[in-house]
Amino acid sequence: MQIVHNISLKPYNTFGLDAIAKQFISVSSIAELQHVLALPNYPEKFILGGGSNMLLTKNMDALVIHINLKGITIVSEEEHFVTVKANAGENWHEFVLWCLKHNYGGLENLSLIPGNVGTAPIQNIGAYGVELKDSFVSCNALMTSSGTMKTFDKAACQFDYRNSIFKQGAKGQFVICSVTFRLSKNKHKLQTNYGSISAQLAEMGIKNPTIQDISKAVIAIRQSKLPDPKIIGNSGSFFKNPVISTKLYNHLKLEFPDAPGYVISDVEVKVPAGWLIEKAGFKGKRFGDYGVHKKQALVLVNYGNAKGSDILKLAQLIQDTIYRLFKIKIEAEVNII
Image: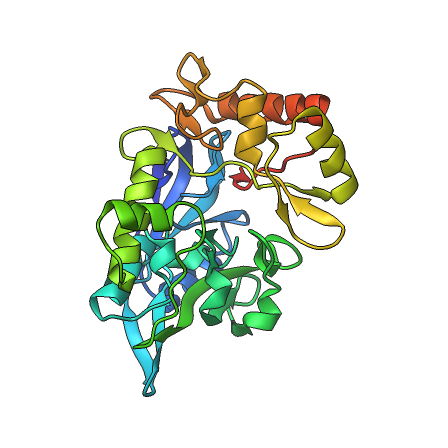
């Protein structure tokens, strides 16, 4: 464990942005993390996980602490369920594959989501009708001010759509060190009705899918629509799908009869942000070394040497245009640093 200076964070963020960290250290145990958090000569500290849900718009003056805690353990087993704990530094997709290898169900719809296990609860990752909270039991998190450990159960995490207490009231106050899940061992409850999973399974010739089949279908769908961060820098979906009033949605339908919407309640409808962005003419638009992906309007991309500030300006232009055209505010899903 050693502090290094003036290191590029390009390998540590999926946007592939070349921001410089003046000080950087990687920790592989809770004891190391506690020690680094207590260092008095570095009053500003920045916690870095998988780097998949952030946009770096500047160089980092703070001490960047890379969370590299590894390990997966079985906590307990019952006849139909197993409780599994994964440490924060585990790659999320590799953890999902580990679960599938052992025939543990519940996370298969979340296959191929970039990032690490420790950052997954922060925004309650979700895809194809499933959210992290559906299998979540608890997480252990270190308080940055005192170095003491606290356990958060599902209720304490205050999960919401792409949201949690770690993005709201407890933002910056804790470092998630491990996450515990309750997964099925048999009689898996399959979620195939969302998006194009059923169509993809049919295309694969599968009538009675296993959890492994669903994972393969999700991977195929994601690869057909989303760019690989190793090839084109991106952070997945950049914006949240906005939830608007039924009244506003009805007005939207009058002008745009093809506007999709998903009823949330008697007074709210969720509208796909990708549809709004595409309707506004941004899908596939390129501005030099950055732009909007040609297949998925929700994804902003770095084609090679873009700056985070460039991508932020594009995001703000999209937000302003959407509001001007539709009177709908869309929020960034990624963290702007």
